[in-house]
View 1 (cartoon, helix red, strand yellow):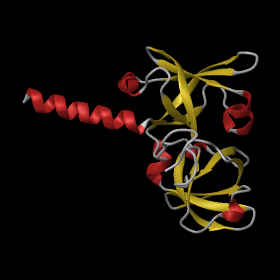
View 2 (spheres, helix red, strand yellow):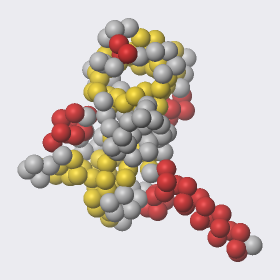
View 3 (cartoon, rainbow, N blue to C red):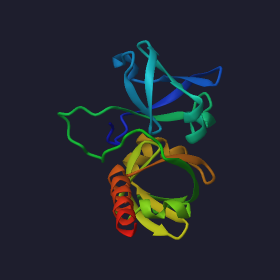
Length: 201
């Protein structure tokens, strides 16, 4: 479980394809405290550490992960948002994030608001019931608040600290990002569907 509060921005040091898996090596200040089997979110994707040293750690993305996330688009030197799993004793400054990406989507617009930025992303019609105004959403592992919803898009506002400390500063129009919708909303929708079905049969 994660909170969507990025701890470090690590560059990709090496990418190695072995069979259908992609071994991703990241240079990060978190690597020196890593351990084998540790869960770390990479652009919002929960991956397991399989190797580490004082400056690097390596994780493996399997074919299904590469198909459902933007990790397959990574190139050496790209910056990756990193977060270790939360401790039960720490404050939950973001929201409950599982590290299980629901889908990818595309950035359609970036507006410089002189002190903040508005990022707009495409929203498929089938996902409309998973977003609410002022609700939480995770983009590339960053916990954010939805500031606007249109028929086929949603927007978030990015403050300077978040812009500087995450890979939002590298996102361009047309780029693919990882999306995880709020788990509480998904549970509510499932239970509502079950309730409706049980009362119509």
